[in-house]
Image (cartoon, rainbow, N blue to C red; front, side):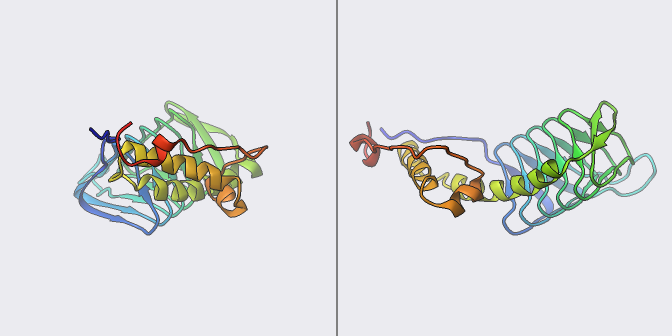
Length: 212
């Protein structure tokens, strides 16, 4: 009997537009029911994140959720009627509420709470609950945001193999590791850094499509 690798599929419901090469990961819910959600290009929304909208809020304004290009949204984030501009970074477990905006190239730290109608200025890191300004991003951190978006675009191509069996996916993982040693482009694309080439042996049972 063949074994299959199962992961919860993302749910994309209602008025939702997703740009080219963006990825919505396992267990995410995007609910464009009473308003719309817009996701730009090469953006990644990671596992178990909830993206929702509002018909009205405390100020009486409509509140769609707009996520720009090359944005990284970490695991278990809640985005509700807010805006994340291009190349913003939202850390794991953060919550961003109605009318709030994370400007281009800004970073919201893991677990932070961005309250209603708050703006996180470009180039800044905000932390805490409620979140406050911590410091300005370093050049290295700014570069990391762009690398993160590119890496997840590459990973999405690999993880789009849900129709394959467990054994086939395991073989593909070994193949990816092997090619990562041989291709500088592939190395950079996935953010993999290896000091020494690996000697990978492919067991006969891994190459077979039959059961173990």
